[in-house]
Every structure is written in C-alpha cells, then in structure tokens.
Length: 325
Image (cartoon, rainbow, N blue to C red; front, side, top):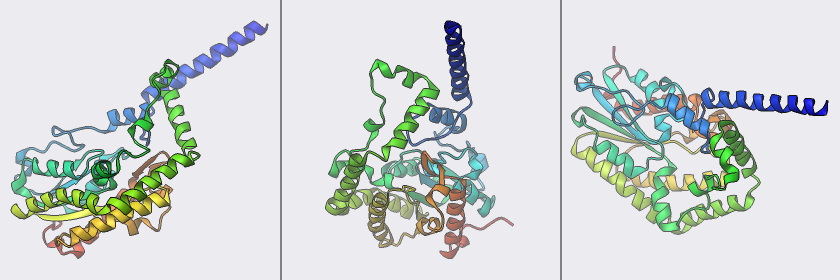
C-alpha cells in the first residue's frame, strides 16, 4: 500500500512539474533584473528588431522623404524593456503628441553608453531630414569610465552567473527551476549586506576620487554629438531618466554624477530635461515594471513623455516641432 501511495505521489509530482515547466517554457515571458530564461522568452516575443537592429519599424526613404525626423538615442529604457506594447513607450507616446508631420526614430539598445549612442546617431542614414536629436542619459553612460578609473565593481556580470557545476544543470535547462533560482537569489540579495556595502563603497570612491575625470571622459562623447549637431544644424536636447533603485545611497551617488554632467552640458548651451522630480510623488514600486525589474513601467513612460513634450514646448522647440492640424 505504501509503495502504491508513493508511486501515485511521485507520478503526481512529476506530472505537475512537467505541466509547470511547459507553461514556463512556452507562455511565461516577462523581464527580470537577473538573466532568467523567461526574460529570454520576453525578448523573443516582444523585442522585434528592424533592419538596423532597433526595436522600431523599418521606414523606407519614401516614407521619410516628407517627414522631419527626431532621433532619440538611448539604452534599454528608450528601447522599452519590460514594455510589451511599443505604443506604451515614451517615444511612441511622444510621437502621438507631436503629430504625423514628424517621425520619431527610436535608437534604443539595452546597455548603450554615450559612445555607442554617439555611433548610432552618426551612422543613421537619413541625416538630411533630422531636425532634433534627444539623447537619453542614464548611469550606463558612466560605466566605461568607472571601470577604467575604479576597476570592476563588486557587483557585475560575473555575480549573475550560474555555477558551472553539474549539480546546477537543471537550473540552466529548466525554465521553471531557473526562474525560482533567480527569484530566490534576488530575494536573499538584500541579506548580503557585505556585498551591498562594497558596492556603495565602490560608487563612493568613484564619486570622491574620480568624478571629474569620469565625467570628462563621458562628456568627450557628448561633445562629439554636440559637434555633429552643430555641423548639421540639428537641435540637441539631453534627457535624464533616473535610476529606480531602492538603495538610497546608490541613488544619491548616481545623482551626484548626473549633477556634474548636467552642469557641463548646460555650460555648452545644450538644454537638459530631468525627469527625477516628476517621479518624486510616486512610490518607486509603482513606477517599475515589476518587483524584479527596475525599468520604468507604462505609467513611468507616460510621465516621461508628458514631461518631455511640455519641456520641449517651454523651451520654444515647439516652434520646430509643430503638431499636425
């Protein structure tokens, strides 16, 4: 009797696992801060690339010939990580606000830093129709210089790796087990005070000892974008989107970097638009894609788009970007 009961329990457990695994493998698709397999599902399902590798449409020269183009160069925020429907990204919301005489081109790729944004702008093929460039700024832009002057941070890609041991084979292969593994990792991460303190010390060291040089190196590529815009008579705006991190120390240090960078940009007569204050009335958890993903959600993207449109108007750039009748 016991053997029969155990057999029934075993079959039930295995069957349940297979059903759950099937669902996670084929139907669960959402983004996470950790490299889960379901995040890969999301990318396959929603991150549809055009011919240039961006999450945007392929616009022919004939479609753009009578359009005035706005290039928005950015990282995963501009690309819309965690936003299932492109229409809910701030770039697409802004497009609806400015009308069909203009065409916004989304040049957002996850992890792009300032140098990569500059390259994306320079190789865009239809430069003669570009009238405005918006560079979306984020802490990623400082990362190459931080690595150069401060070394590799204590929390980096290697910290997000599954051990090579054969004991972890099921974690690498099973979509369900993989998801549970990384969620437990994220949940228990808050207890790793030593590592968090090391990361805060790393950022604090970068700010206190190397902020000037890090900002100068980052600004070098911004200067190239500024020169490009000047040569081609294109308006330029820098958009800062804050980090939705609950670690207040990290947020303060990141803001310190941005404050220095903002001053350098504005000293060169380039306007900046900072979304930080527009986020302030809301809880961070209400602006993030989910508990495991720090990217802005649909609500946050709308806040960005509305404020961006208002600021462009206040800066009299509305005389350049005119909504269609």
